[in-house]
Image (cartoon, rainbow, N blue to C red; front, side, top):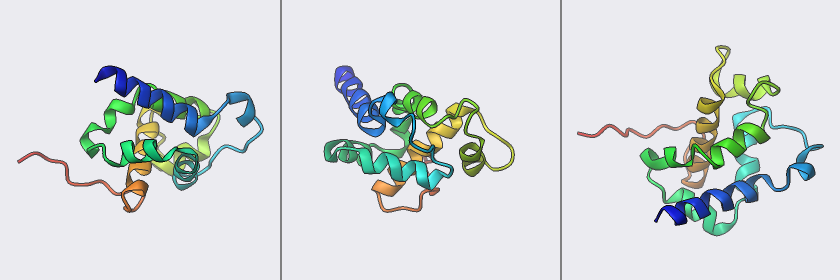
Length: 124
C-alpha cells in the first residue's frame, strides 16, 4: 500500500508541475483559484480520481511529495506573496499551510465544491 501511495505522489507531482525548466518562464499563480485550476488542468484522469476519492481527512498524506512540489513550484517559500495572501489573508501563513489549502482546493474542485469549502470532519 505504501508503494502505491508513493507512486501516486510522484505521478501527481510530475503531472501537476512538469519539468521545472519548462515552467521557469510561466507566470506563477497569484490566487488560490489560479493555483487549483493549473494543477487540475495538468492532472491525469486516474490522478484526479485518486484525489477526488481520498477522504478529506486523509489529504494530509499528500503533504510530503505533492505538497513539496506545490511549495517549490508556486514560490510559497517567499517569492510569491500574492498567492500566500490570497490563500491566508493579510496575516501570511507558513508555506506548509498554504500548500495544504491548495491541496484542499484541488480536492474541492474535483468534488464539485467551492474551492475554499471545508467539510465538517469532526468525529462524533
